[in-house]
Image (tube, rainbow, N blue to C red; front, side):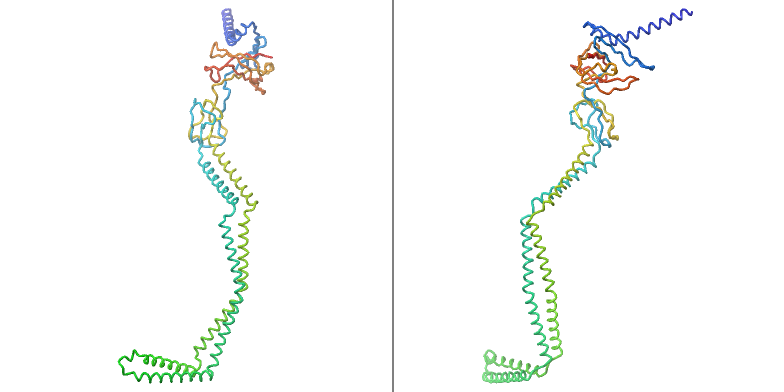
Amino acid sequence: MKRWGMLLTVVLGAIVLAAVGGFWFMRSGSMNAVLAADGDTADIAQVEDAGDSAPVQFVTRNNGWVEVDGRVVPAISSDLSMPVSGVIAEILVSEGDMVEAGQPLLRLRSQQQSIAVTQAAAQLQQAEARLAELKAGAREEDIQSALAGLVAAQARQNRLEETGPNDIAAAEANLAAAQASLQRVYEGTSEQQIIAARADLANAEASRAQAQSAYDRVKDRSDVGMLPESVQLQQATNAYNAALARLEDLQRGALVSDVNAATAQVRRAQAQLEALRAAFPSDVIVAKSDVQRAQAQFDLLAAGNRAETIAVTEAEVALAQARLEQAQAALNDTELQAPFAGTIAALNVAVGEQATAGAPVMQLADLTRWQIETEDLTELSVVDITEGAEARIVFDAIPGLEKQGQVMRVRPIGEDRRGDIVYTVIVDPAEQDSRLLWNMTAVVNIQAK
């Protein structure tokens, strides 16, 4: 039984070794066959990890060729993210859509940003209008209006300076007349006035008697009322009564009411004179101040705006422009645009979700142009690879497909992978194939230097 068990173990071990050898033969057999067809011989070396994991790579050297594993990747791809956080309002594309460079892909809610742009635009318009007004200077109508105000102020000053003393002199004369009238009231009627009044009364009485005699001669006529004798008698009678009243008034003397009236007239004249004397200097001062103010206003309008004032306003316009650009940039940040033409390979968010600044929301790639990235090229082999080196590519998923290529770039930074430092080499196929898909595996033979 022990002999049969040992025999079974040996057989099973042989089967496992045969399976492993067959796998690696199939893995590299196609490329080795290609190289062997050119008369090259294959030298295979296995590099193993110090741990329990699978081997990192099999490096096949065929007379100066290095064979490595790789995968198909787009020549251009990007994980797109938003520069600001916000709630997603619109998603304008779906997975698989082809887009052009600059095409909008996604928008966040942007009400506040839109309001900020509107406000900044209004502030800029206001600042620009102010600057235009300053540069245009004063209107001709404003200058003429200021000139008219100056002329009016000067005329008022001249009038006060010229008429003020005359008004005071007239008020003084009016006061003197009122005082003389009051004095006459206090002194009463003179003898000469009474004699003259009596003479006036005697003359009036004689005229009335003469008119009465003429009237008596025609008083019996039926039309006596229409005759001139009747009118003359009436006029003579009125003159007599007036002369009599005048004489009686003079003989009676001054009344209390006359004294009061004359006294009030004196007080009014005195108050008017004092008001003129008090107001004259201050009125002239005010008038001179009005002239100076009107002159300054006219000079300001006629001279135009100062360069310093215009410079300050220009700075305000520049500041308003910067604020508008800042607000517009904040609004633009709420919209994601395609940085290049390509296909939406993955969409990671939905409408209504919160987008975090810097977190990928979708993946964009140019699926019309593929490259091959190597995965297991160690530091022992990368030193033999140079940019521009020839490469031959076969694909595990597409038997019989072989592409010629060229090393485009050797990334200068290696990565630690299961204890080995590996480097990535970018290989550009000379021709594209529509059957290739992202992350398909490939075997790449690169001509070593």
